Image 1 (tube, rainbow, N blue to C red):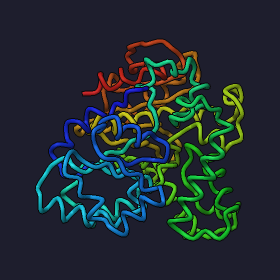
Image 2: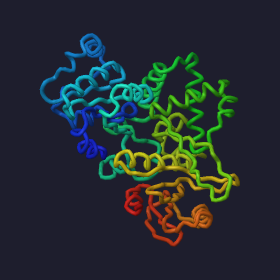
Image 3: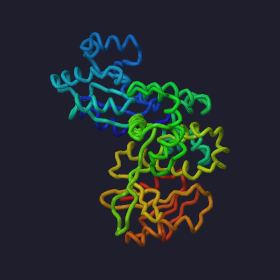
Length: 390
């Protein structure tokens, strides 16, 4: 079993809050983590019809465990329990008794905000990270393989092939969950929308382009995009606001939380397909930026992530902002260092007045270098980046 980095954060906080919520995409390991950290707690799986019926018909009895605590798995199937939990924790004042997990972030967070405000610690558990897998038998030897396989735990723990498991994941979970949130009459168009999103990784969102290809109005497309965000399928990277006397792009970029899922939607069948695909650079960029997000979620790092681009095309792939300091990051899929890789960092340093030593280049090779133009780090050693950022 792979140890999840977020475990230490949960252990430190759960005894200080009445309720702990572990949220994230389906099959990211929430149930396994909850059972591992709270092995003596009474466990209820609310996806099971009989358990769900028990929760709806007699919630007080279900919640009346007198010793230990309770794990309520996939709480979005019985959100009315949250109101009962609120009353019970207010009466008892007991900390650490209720552990809830959930997958539909949009509806669940709304319910949590209404019922458990000030009473719950929320943690987002994403699929495995490279940092978690580094010392395991699952660590990939090259970035193309890592991009292709992605990070969903069942791919590794059950030794499943991507082409066997991911299509079922898309159909069983994404399409089912989305239909529960909104009424999609033409599921074929929504599936096409998913594929088009994969084909636009790392690009500025253009709803007019989506609309022309799918035949769906912009309002509907924005709602679909919001649902994919809420379901932890995609995330939107926002542009940084400081302009340095330049006009800046104000539109966000689109990325997937899991590159394996994106590869499946693109029809890629192997790591070799990734290596020759025209989107390899975008997929590599997605891999690195998603890993930065995971590190923040797992380690409670106080930083924000952006990109920077002016209206003439000058760009930085990623900007980390921590304690009012900016750390520009360029991301290149190539395995051989090239002086052109530093052009964006050099331009940004001159434009912003930033010390070039605060810059980073992450690439597909294996060398670690400290240059006057910035730190060079391999794709699978992102932990070194965070050791250097202060």
